[in-house]
Amino acid sequence: MAEILPAGITHYPPLAGSDETMAWILKRMLQNPRLPENLRRVESWPEPMRAEWSNDEGLAAARRHRERLVQSLRRTRARIDAFHPDFIVIWGDDQYENFREDVVPPYCIYAHESFEFGPPPHNIWKESTETKFHARGHVAAAKRLATGLIEAGFDTAYSYKPLHHPLGHAFANAVLYLDYDRTGFSYPIIPFSINCYGRKVIAQRGGLPMFDRPPSEVQFDPPAPTPRRLFELGAATARIFNASPWRVALLASSGWSHAFLTEKNNFLYPDTPADRNLFEALQRGDYETWKNYPASAVEDSGQQELLNWMCLAGALAELNRKPKEVEFIDTWIFNSSKCFLVAPPSN
Image 1 (cartoon, helix red, strand yellow):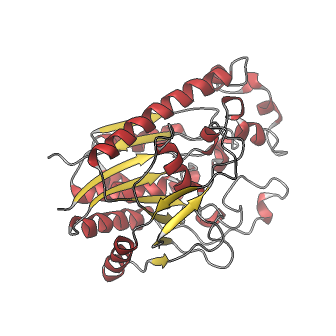
Image 2 (cartoon, rainbow, N blue to C red):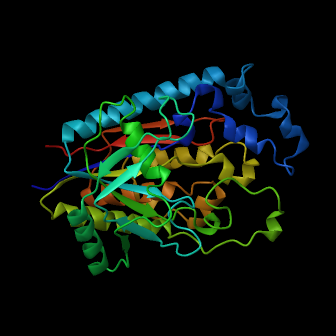
Image 3 (cartoon, one colour):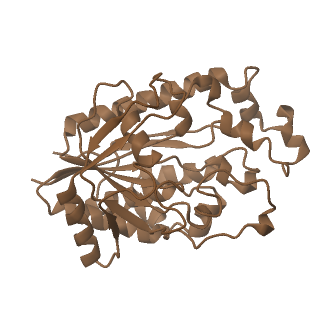
């Protein structure tokens, strides 16, 4: 009998590194040659940002940040284990990893037999980059999802093998972090790649701003799919699996507002107020606010990766379900707001 578990986590890359390096993105943004000179000095930062940075360049704050993130990951993993899904569909972004200049689909379902990937270098687990992790795919369910979405009017791309990269970090980190304690991860996965970075996926190679050229010289790409379209995509995904024989976890993997995408904050800190507004709407089950969120607001607030959660919000709306557990973790110096969510079936 079909059952669906909507959930959301972060795939925050610096979590895989040490506490000493967790603030490296901020340090990189301080090298921006166009950064106003006063913002290079800590005393000019907003007071909460100075407090988080403290006199140890954020080391103590990094330890606290890690503790909160890991606790939330463990709690989410426990809920997934209790639900025991047949597979996990992961909505995640591709940052110039598998999709590059040859093709950038708006979204793509990975109908792969299996996935092989390694840990990032200099990781907290002290694992060699030669270490290989393996995750099973679920081809039948991936093909059923692609078929159902196409029949519902979503011209969905799909693939049977990787193009440029075995598995982007939005998906690999989701597995690595849900198995943070290295107890094993046996659930098959269906990565569902969303072109979150849109106008910056090729122009910025899905990453940090390029400070070697003025903004007027950057040739931006076509935009990402709109929030409404991805909300509807998530709702259709929930409908398809609700009519299936499987127990399915639908997982959004991403941070929310990113400092390095938030130009109005000089790329130093995320747009936490914008994130909190959406978080509060999520808490109360106000999915219309999510569905009607403007694409322009996504870019203005550096919330590109929030588009993965638009799919999750659509699934929640389709299932008429509010989150049972939801947590918002903000920060001034660790690049992005993070959110965790679990919304299990009531029975």
